[in-house]
Length: 104
Image (cartoon, rainbow, N blue to C red; front, side, top):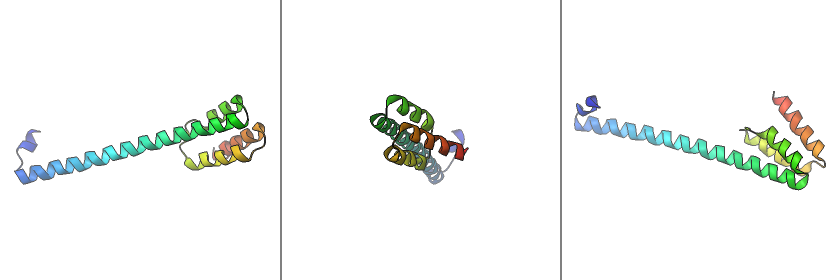
């Protein structure tokens, strides 16, 4: 901080403006990451609830385990469609398993 105190007023202002922009950018990036994580967690919980309503709790739990940590919205969207179109819990879990295996 001593070096900053040695700066001329205009230089000091530019220095702090730069720091403010950097901090603001970092805060926005952190907020976006937190919001995205919360959104994905909410979507996973919604899918689990839908699977429980359509099938049963054990199926919903297995679906939740399969989707835990998934950070790909397209994968969650795909799973959402499968909860709707699959006629049996076995069919749903098979599709989820196949998709997971295909992705490695």
